[in-house]
Amino acid sequence: MFSKTSLVDKLKIYTVLQNMASGLVQPFASFLGAVIGASGIELGIVSTANTFFSNVSQLLVSKLKSDSKMFLAVSEALLGVAWLCMALFGFVSSTLYVLIYSVIAATSGATSLGWLLVMERASVKSRGKTLAEYGFYGTLGGFVSTLFAGFFVRANYSEMRYFYFSSALIFFFNAYLATSFYQVERKKERAQGSNDQLTRFYISTFIFMLSWSFAWPLFPLAQLYIFRMNESQVAILSITGSVSTLLLQKKIGVLVDKNRTLMMFLGRAGLTVFPLAYAFSTNVYELYLANLFSGFTNSVSNTAYFSYLFDKASDKKAAITMYNVYSGFGALLGGILGGLSYELLYPRLGANTLRVLFKAIALGRFSASIPFFLLLKKKEDTL
Image 1 (cartoon, rainbow, N blue to C red):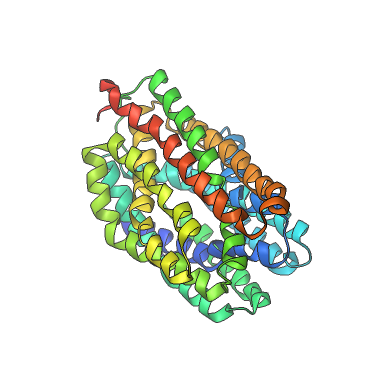
Image 2: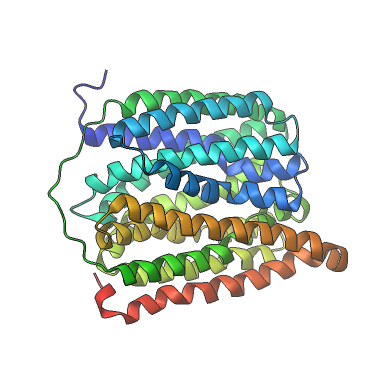
């Protein structure tokens, strides 16, 4: 079926479909957890699952000896099975919802590793620009599907089962598509970095992920209890970020190639905007406006950090794995602490708990972005 299609076109089709399938379901995962009554700690697990379980699974499967296309194909098929299970059993209880979603996140990690290995080979000539281009197509696919799912479901949350089934079918198709990829050949590169550089980068990542994920279980609680949002409004919130990402992705990719470490710092520091928005906004429209800034932070996240890894590390798979391990454990710890903090403080602060925590989180995020600025002080880190 795809024998006459170029690799570039196949990769574009894959990334559009992958993000379309994810866009149908992922933006609503934490919100639906809150809807079905998940506790603060359970929301901490759900909101960080795509970082922790995804990244830890990459550590476990990175030792497998398999070419990237077959690795990707098998992972996609398993991801389709996992979403079928969510469609059938996900709404039985909050505990089962959390369990199945954790399996989905772990399986997604394997697909992400396979995709990154494919993209590492495809982006050799221009890291930021190439990754930004594929990020653009992916964002476009996710934008459309999230908008459709949100407005179809609105407050009829049980109808999400239809989208779980739909996502599963798309993942099965992408498994088939991945088998048609062929290996991208390139010459052996000499890494430009050192172990010390990578260690500083990993530690900086862990510190930031801890502060970043602290807010993740709190966002759906605020959406539900402060702003009284339904799923269509959650979809709008998601797509405001998607639209701005589409507009900025390619431009940011060029800037990443010019000054990677500066963009890494600005991308992290910019994430203080969102807890501040939740702390001070009086209505959902102000959240929509603030979320436009995520076009910048998303674009940097889609390009800068893996570009840095690809150029600094001699063993790409090991570097990706270590980065993900530091990210994953930082995210899980931060998410659980965020959910636990809400449960402990709510009896004392009541309705003000979330806004107080968001203010503290904004300060924590900015402080945790400073180690990325310090990377600029090292001359050997300039690309």
